[in-house]
Length: 122
Image 1 (cartoon, rainbow, N blue to C red):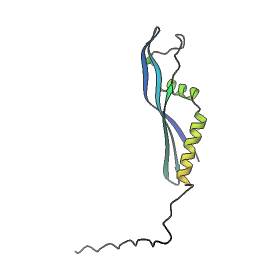
Image 2: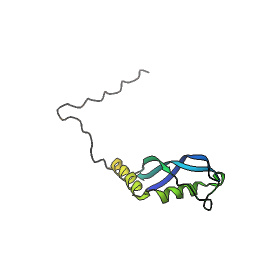
Image 3: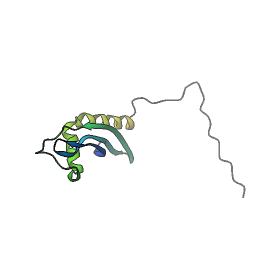
Image 4: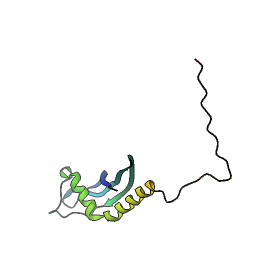
């Protein structure tokens, strides 16, 4: 099953000043989503969290207005165990496609018959 994994960055909390640096990102709120289609049915699994950022040095600092989505996703990829996160999301999709537990009706209670539609007078 092919699964597409994507990041969403919801917000970034910043410190107004850290030494000589201005608007330093200290925390990234993220969503990781997994999507696939099986037998023409879309399945999605989602995880949310926060990633604490290390204080950058003046030599590797990017000014807040110059940050890109790709750069912030690179922080998430480098600083988190993305392999385990993706495995968890994949297992959630697998459980939705092939539920390990299902609820059956109680065998001693007869099913409720479906009423037949009443014809509309013309």
